[in-house]
Amino acid sequence: MIEALQDADLAKIDLARQELLEEERRCWEDTYQEVDERFPSGAGGFNRVTRGDIRGSRNYDSTHVTGIERFAAAGVHITTPEHTSYIKPKFIDPELMKQREVRLWCEEAGRRLYAIRHAQHTGFITAAIEDWDQLGRYGTSLVWQEARRNGRGLFYRALHLSTCWIDTDFAGLVDTVHRKHEMTVRQLEQQFGGDALTPKMREVLEDRDSTKADRVKFEILHVVAPNTQWDADKFDHRRFPISSRYLAIDEKMYLRRKGYHTMPISASRHMTSPGEKYGRSPAIKVMPNINGVNAMKLTTLRAGHKAVDPALLFADDQGVMKLVSKPGGMNAGLVSDDGRPLVHRMPGGEAGIPYAIEMIQDERATVKGAFLEEFYSIITDPNSRMTTVEVYERMAKEGVLVRPFASRYATEKQHPMTQRDLDLALRAGQIAPMPEVVQEAGAWPQIDYENPLAAMAKAEDSGKTMRYVQGLPILAEIDPDVRYRVNVDAIAIGLARDTGVPEKYIRSDEEVARLKQGDAEAQGAAIDAELLARTGSAVKDFAQADKLARMG
Image: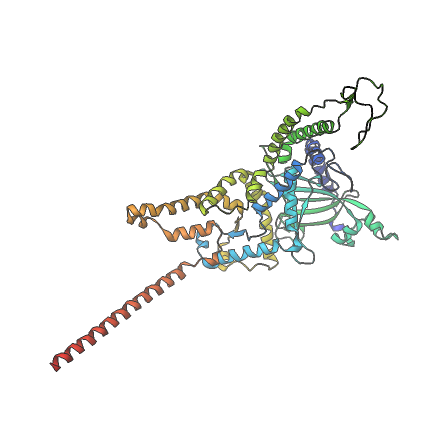
């Protein structure tokens, strides 16, 4: 235990606020438990299921289970696609962005940020999929990003909502996260060091039973919130704008009190109404449909069971000594003298099965729509026969489906995560310092994303431009002067940037001017050479004519 970290009054405040946050979210707990019943996952969760126990045993239909998997896949694809460098820093000041060195720095910084984030050891894609999966289940999800202790890059980890509580600032954005979780003594020593452990933890660590440190767990409260004592001139935890405190709940002792320059835990909500703190998910939205389709599926299964293995009817049991219902079984004496069966099948409602299947399909369609099944089908469609214009127009229409919540994801999750990545990378020297002109201006880059979501937003303008260009030849046949209305150079630059063409593939204005000058000089030289050749030929012809005249 480190005495300098201890503050009994602050510990009471942190624990009291934790109780308040737990009480505030208690109204959501029943809903989350119902979600856990329907969506199978690992141990823990809001139902505290132990490892190895079966979850989702109430399900008779798996539409929502496959739906959330595709929802997560689609979410990752449109926001953080692994196959392309989508992070594009830029400066708001247009004068800065006119500087080629600034644009090249932005491009290189974006490339480095992408490489750092998607390195194999970071686990980013795994965290992103789990993040979107949790958004689809509960409507609120958190991701923790931190520099590794060995200095080798970053790690990303999705945190289960059952261990986290959030609070918002005056603007409704999440600025406080409380995380309550259990850790073994061995894990605590690895993260905080032996000197920071409480007396009870050290007692377990020093026990003769070497396995005890791996079995005994302590409950830890991690508080991340704005630092109310922020003072940049201090040299302790007060110098950070964001405070970070690890509290051992049982002994009310702090294991670590430090801070961050940027928020290490980013929380996003799927959809909220005014005044709501926690988000609402597609699963919560269509839970009545999920319950309904499972109830109908169970009834239909029973009806089908009765249809294929029905109960048997007969007038009385006289003469019916034994029934053999197995395939190929022989039942002697169960036919009357005139050939009528003495045993009949009991009607089981099989006539209603087609109607039940139709109702199930209707409910499934609603569930699939909530989990973006149609959108998932569109982005995985291998059909490539569309023209460029048709692709742009279709992308614009698709964007209407996902832009509301995907844009919110960019605001609440992507932006703070990327800004933290940039801050950590600059401090670690993993990205070159900003150009001198930027430093003199005191500017800081904002982040744009060249992902499918951004492409959908720009596709409408690009599609209109391409339609316009395609129609010009028809107008030119009527009036050739129409070509003077088109700024081809501006269109070339605009389409390149709208479609995410790297800056290094586009020549600068200076390079274009030099090429034009070179072309003009080459053309002038060619004209001069042709004139010289013609002049020489004329002189030769004149000399020959003069010679002939003298001879005559």
